[in-house]
Length: 583
Ligand SMILES: Nc1ncnc2c1ncn2[C@@H]1O[C@H](COP(=O)(O)OP(=O)(O)OC[C@H]2O[C@@H]([n+]3cccc(C(=O)O)c3)[C@H](O)[C@@H]2O)[C@@H](O)[C@H]1O
Ligand SMILES: Nc1ncnc2c1ncn2[C@@H]1O[C@H](COP(=O)(O)OP(=O)(O)OP(=O)(O)O)[C@@H](O)[C@H]1O
Ligand SMILES: NC(=O)CC[C@H](N)C(=O)O
Image (cartoon, rainbow, N blue to C red; front, top):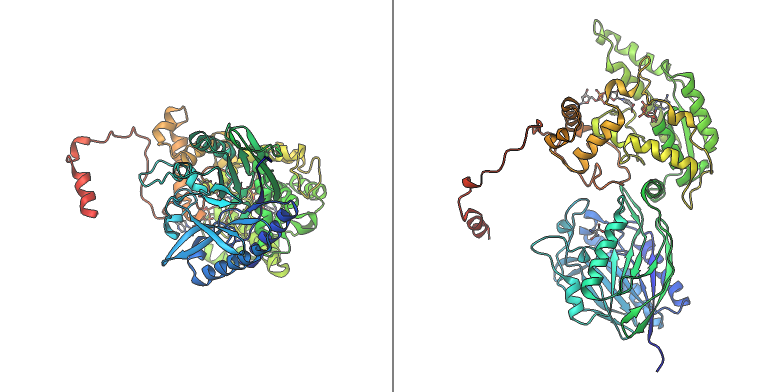
């Protein structure tokens, strides 16, 4: 008897949210490739035809119909006897909207499976959008029973209404699990995904194919990095991260179930992965929104230098323009370093002194400010003159302004609204200042595959070793207004990423006054962050979709030990009766 096998093509592709026609065309092209490989099935990622995450767009009836029409067309095309297709799509049934996966085969929509567990935390809002599907049995492709849990369905988050889809699939005879994902990048997320998949494979005894989306969608980056595990937990295949890839895997039936020995690509980790995420995020934002290129203010400082390098790696030097906008506080060394940076990156570079603009503003305001001290107002006028000039060049050329505030600055509001905060997208919004230094040094030694910039030292070393300064007054350094960045970033990470009480941070050895000051700055800068440009998410909690604080907010943690809850005050049974009342 001949050996039984099934060939499954993983299409790790970059859809664009809302581009139903373009996404369907990508799926069609992937199927053609799968057909050429003699595959039985081609798999695309979660909600592929819509693009992920579609947010409230998916509630629009016209969009739902467009997705369905595209799926029906793709289904008709499978009458050609080629591979079946498993593709994510929104689906309306009995008046309810589902996050679905359709099996297209033999000219028909052969099966539909609906996501049962809808993530509603962090960056996800799926309960707002979709109805929960039932846990269902496997679908059959060429005689093989395939279980299709959709993304969150394998995460087994602690929740009362969690549906154990994988258990249900194993009990109903699934032989292989194929999981379409829209799983956004965050630092060390690959380890987390692996541990989740190891747990599901161990529990079910089934091999699992984890197929992830790739590409940037506003602040989210989908890194791809799809992989498969055999039932004995050996790695069956590992696709590359941060690039599109179509790979056909041959699965063979053995006495111990289905097995595959596919290609295994080495993965980027840590800072390298973060840098690649920033490049991909900016590239896709610019490309998918149709900008011909970008421009940014280059100050001779490290934030704009790193952003310029990311922009060149993302788009190519011919699509990036650097503008030095000096004023009387701009040191010669800043002018020299900015020029060196532009030359090393090979970008167009101009110097536009801002004195006339700043002096003009000051002259206009002189009667209004008569008798008042010079203060931060005049500093902000410099940042605003720069922001206005950069936006004017954007308007004239169509190029988008890249804004450069790092996460430390975004946290404490160390940036000028309508000044250096001007811009359409921020590639380093979720990168703390200490990491800005690390990534800059890293980029001088290494660049990711597919980066369009030159190799070697692109960020002059002097920019990396010089103390940071906003150069808005004489001899200013960031450390005049802020604690040292090592201290600031360590406190911020505890406050932002871990929501630690101030008392815990102080107990860990940080100075009480510094901690309370940083917390205060973090709180009062919410209004600025709400007006800030979107930027790439790389941490477990970014400013944007992950952290949604009220702007108007009187609550303050004063660093005192937290009071123990007084359980005696809770009347026994009060919770149960409240539930009964609500129910
Ligand atoms: N809750 C609230 N809701 C809405 N609006 C609020 C507000 N609180 C203040 N405001 C408004 O915001 C204004 C204050 O904000 P803003 O005008 O930005 O000015 P502000 O935050 O006072 O100053 C800018 C800060 O950023 C620093 N900076 C500037 C430029 C570059 C860099 C750098 O090195 O990267 C640092 C600069 O040294 C200074 O510490 C107020 O005058 C008021 O109009
Ligand atoms: N002289 C300048 N010429 C051009 N752009 C400038 C200049 N000064 C500031 N900018 C722009 O404003 C942003 C914030 O600038 P600033 O120098 O005040 O602070 P920073 O956060 O230390 O940034 P950088 O490290 O890039 O200097 C810069 O990244 C840059 O885009
Ligand atoms: N789209 C999803 O369901 C993703 C949720 C999942 N926990 C992840 O981050 O990968």
